[in-house]
Image (cartoon, rainbow, N blue to C red):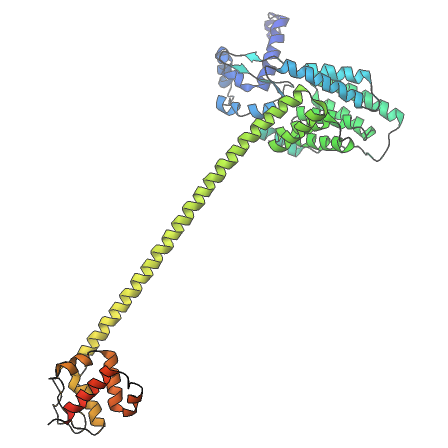
Length: 425
């Protein structure tokens, strides 16, 4: 029978198997170790979909933020022990038993680094997979734990009961029963909402439970109750580190180290500062990239505007040239002017550049006989000057205009020449 088949294995075998499964729950990347190829192949044969090794590596950062243990975990645990001791002393009801429980709890954080065939694998101290996206998405679905009323002073019996619940919670944490520990600490806080150490202890448990947002809220309450309580800043810094708010986390952890230094806070501060520098560098690099993109867009838009303006100018020039050419063609096609009064038909036609026509037309209106001016090169050249021509014609049309141009020697000379030639036979 299946039971008889299992009886052939020793108790130590099943113990080792439970340990292996627990470690795989914490760090699924262990499945990719060569020595577990047979187990991975078995899981695949059952239809299991295994995560790739590359996707699992991305959870290492958040695992550290939630309290992942490294090679230096033993030293960190001793510092956590001293911090827990000072926390117990800060509680109004004291309680040496609570201090001892917190020391045991801090010792339970120490987990040795498991060696694979290739590299050391960092394990979470509380046996939980803390993938960032999964943890935060799950926390969003959970209601926040109840808060105490700091305006109500607890009785002596309530304080004693809260102390017992806190000690029980530490025992539960030692046994990795994080959810029950959170419930016990919540009951303690409801009884006594004036003790900062209860909120700090629950913040620690919530961080272990993968609920950094709720842990930050508890740490805020602890800071509000006692602004000189180092552990409150430490837990808030750890929660903010898990929330990837590195600058805020570093600020809290510096305050924690200043008030009550321990290796846990110092190590968390080191990680926060490293990640803050990386984030700042990445932000600066992204800002430079965005600035370059904006410059490229602006340059492209400026070039497009210049090209459009050049095209509009070219079109305007083309329209102007076409209009000018059309006017020239129309002038060439215009009929010859009619003979002025007193002139015989055909007179003045065929004269050079129409000089005779224009001058004789004005002279005829003045009652003067027509003459030929085209044979005089000086008159022809002067009539080529549009401005001088306009002045001459206006003076011939209205002699009063001479008053305006009496200092124009060129005009006066031309006028004299025209009138002299007109009087010739």
